[in-house]
Length: 381
Image (cartoon, rainbow, N blue to C red; front, side, top):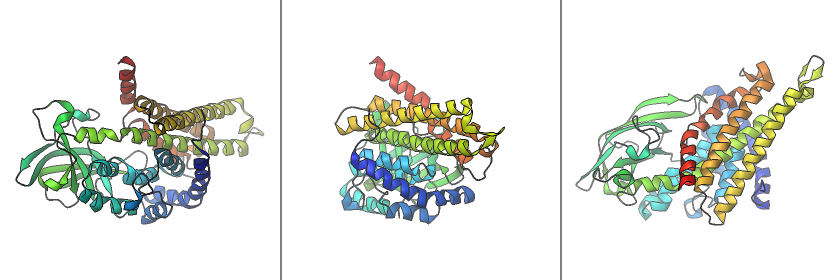
């Protein structure tokens, strides 16, 4: 397996690495210090052509393929996880859902602003009592004249407190079982009846916020329905393969940055008259991390090549997400251990920040346990 999907993307990696180190590293330090995402972060990504990566040129996007998207996620993750979330906000579930299933009016209304970074999108699926059981959601949308009335709650929705548009999954036909009873709606900020009821920060960064939403007799017009009624679950799940591979790539980028910092620290830090790099225990930790990172990169980009050739990669995408998210946790733990006290404080090394931040990957976008369940199901068919 090759670790680069093509010569063109190998060149792109060099360009993105230079951009990330020169422009995003300083912003990452600012984000960690202030707990806020400055407008400059959006502007830098837009100027580099990283917003709307998967969206057509006609709307201001880059019309890139999935491998390019993943390469971008990998490289910006070397700076801060928040940059992957900004990219995903313009090429993730809601934007891609609008592109694939939206009407001409819906695409024209929302996609140009998403590509420009002037609009922000969120994806409203998770509820207090459902968690990973997405098909069991309770939020209801009932037919009313010329529209729908939505009632229910959503929990831990990334960026929903600042979103201009939220794709809300709701039950429209309770007589049906499972997936066919759910529809997708595009609910805009300021719609009467939709309210942000709580905002939480995550273990990784105060700048990454999750919001709870309440819908109380929230009436939306027929034009808010995305795709056909009853097709909401399929719309939501349709982009999960992209999401899992994007997360896998982000894990690889963060792990590679951690390994680089660990190597440099081991070479320059002396204990008992010799550099840490001379200690076998340190060497083995570095070697294990290097092997795991290269394995993850080879597996992920081989999966991307299979996707480009039209093969079904659903189970492989789950395997990538499981392996890469577990891998980056191990690499981060070793990096803290190698740095010792310097890895525990918010000082000259961002190791401590990465250690906090990468813990998210084993939970968000489908936990490790969910990925194992999906993989097992594919094996047992």
